[in-house]
Image (cartoon, rainbow, N blue to C red; front, side):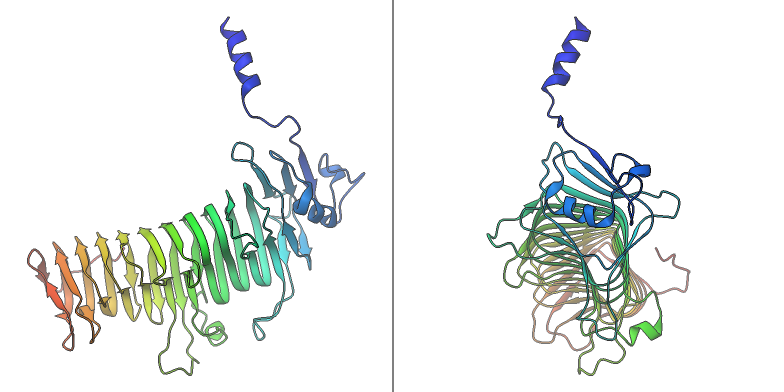
Length: 396
């Protein structure tokens, strides 16, 4: 009876009856019906499948090789129970490499490798390399304003690019273990209409410390950028992400800017857990929305490690080797159990603001001043300790 029960249960589960595996190589192989690697489809056929041909539960397996000069439109629709998987597979020559036409000296011109159309939903992209493009993955504003649900991006590496990811109108969006390196503008950009987003273990490294590349970056190079100027983003969560080396030494503006994590005011419910921002020209974390929460985050070697423009809470964070540990504007900002190490100011407040900053149970080590001299705000250190000895401090 138990065997019969479980057999009947399996019949009721929402598994797609017609789910298929397709195999792809750059030039195809054999009979080119995609049934196995010996008879792989070619890249042009894969482009057609991504646009309209894949069904819920299908897997498009892309083998090793160079996929050059092809722009893919992804318009297929899976379901929550049976998503569509587009994955790179190492068939002997490493993960597949997708490359376009792009030149960092003319950064606004070039290829867009993957574009998510309005109908794209419940699709996962995994295990790909992307090179030489103006945008790696683009999800433009939908014509209806409705968000694309259930998009997943995993283990994707991008290099030599203008924008890595440029997202609008996406919900239940996840990016995990994705890396963008050597770009001229932004690593991960959430333009607007992105809701319920998780970004986990992703890296945005603008120059990898290469001063020659830094002379080619554009104005306002950012690692992770939540814009939301016209349509807000909401419920964005960043976990174990790193943003570093956003500099532009040749900027001619009076105010030189390059930030690790950036969020404009018209966004809501942003959370940063164990994120790290290092060696950015201005802010490590430059966050304008109300109610920002940061836990166990690290800011190092930025001009101002944490720039918090409105109400924010910090817990267990480390801020060191910079001019300002926290820069605040309208507040209030509360930092609990945080460490401030080798700073000119632990806290600096904008001159025309009346922000209240409270340090609770915090350690200040080798800090010249708890609060900057010219400030319009107040600092409360009732429950904090200050320590100025020369003992070594372990930097996270």
